[in-house]
Length: 436
Ligand SMILES: [Zn+2]
Image 1 (cartoon, rainbow, N blue to C red):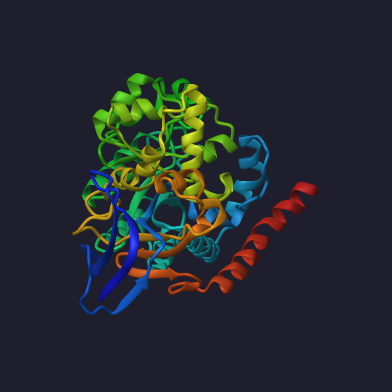
Image 2 (image 1 turned 45 degrees about the horizontal axis):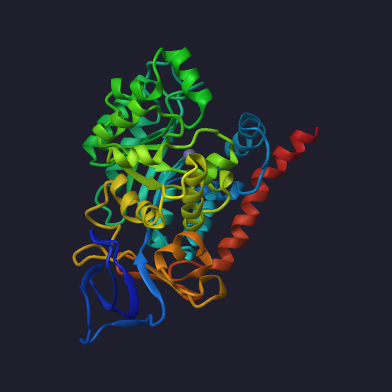
């Protein structure tokens, strides 16, 4: 299978961040050439006037929470979780997870995201739907110990999770991961066993860490140490670990994260919306050479999966926090959303830039619109002005998932109708109970 993308401006995001006017040849899912392509191909995409960039990497999300988008907004975090999210989640069945994941997959593909890193329940269904949609990613099976097992007992789901990891370990696009929710909800045995499984199946250990100040101090009260120290003590802070948030870490903890080689998913939109207060120390993490990517977090706390929006927020939040317009430049932020995210997910040798030999995860952006005119610097536009709607084509592993209005793996109308129905079924009884 050969695909030619003809005449685009190619933002390679390679080591030198070269921007080239060139064709790109994709062969058997990989980037085979950047330059003139004259040979016969199976499909040509005319990309004159457009920008070709590496696919965006969403380093932390909960895809099926798309069904809870806009549900119970503007409540304090604890009340939001207890009165809305948890009761609705308790009602979720596999078919709901599938409907929510398909909705999220549609949004990701529409908005130029090619790789996801998920954490939720029924992840076998999430992995299955994402694989069918043609996305690349990691499906993290979430675990919560509180209320299920004692503080030093392993989570009862672990045997099932091990079978899930074995099932997906050789899939070309999607693999599984153990995902203990957080140190305040999971104990030492669950983390220890998750670390063993991540190593055995060569995958991530995906967890929330240092999201809120309350979380950090609760863990100190409960376990006598801060969450990162706890993770380290139980073999769960390694180069396989992906830490979501890290809004409340010290400078010393920044060095610890970097030295461990762990990845960090920065989720500024979710942090701002849930009012977590702490701003992840991006300049320090980058100076320490930590692997940092961007995440949207779940669509219930964002409320979109639009990584263009997240890029803009990332740049703005750090400039504002530091009183310094030079921190978090457009190029730095675009790096986080592409090569940075890929490195944080241990996929840096496969995706994250447009280079010969890498897998062809590519996005075409059409800048011929008022908000992207005139063009002085495409990188600036991608971070500060572009939106998900400016994406024209999304390609994963050399397969065209979307070209203009043509979605080749998903049926948009049906997905929207199913999602609306599922969301109403989940939330109506909760609403009724709240009124009673
Ligand atoms: Zn999260």
